[in-house]
Amino acid sequence: MVATDRKGNPTMKVAKVGRVDVKSIERTIGGLVSKDNAICSDAHPSIVSWASGKELEHHTFVASRQHVKDRCYHVQHVNSLDNLYERWVKRFYGVATRYLPQYLNWFVFLRKMRTSEYPLADMAKILTANTNAIKVFREIEEKYMELHDPHYSTT
Image: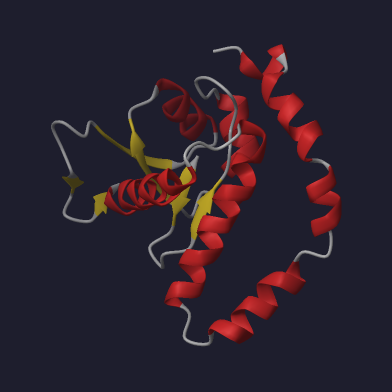
């Protein structure tokens, strides 16, 4: 899942292996949105159902037909971020699925550092913000297995 707000704060998380469903959307970005947010996305049925269930203002787009709605709603920031990530990750000649969350975090970190007015201070803040980093690293294998669990991978 790739999401960003109008201020350019990106979130990139692995939802699941295979097509996303309502549960995987809620698990990855559900805690980041509220009824105060307007959501813009493609017209994927799971995203539409998730946004409807949370009673969110939701604007859908079919990229081949429409790029902007009401002169302010669009998905270009997300599409751009996704494109930048794809070009960035190509240099690694393939990424193991189990490490994909770390590559996504690395990419988001680099984007934040690139736009930071005070990169050293912001880097220190980001690095010290996650006191559970070692625990998270040790849970990579467990999280990877969850992605392959039949319960999560049904479409």
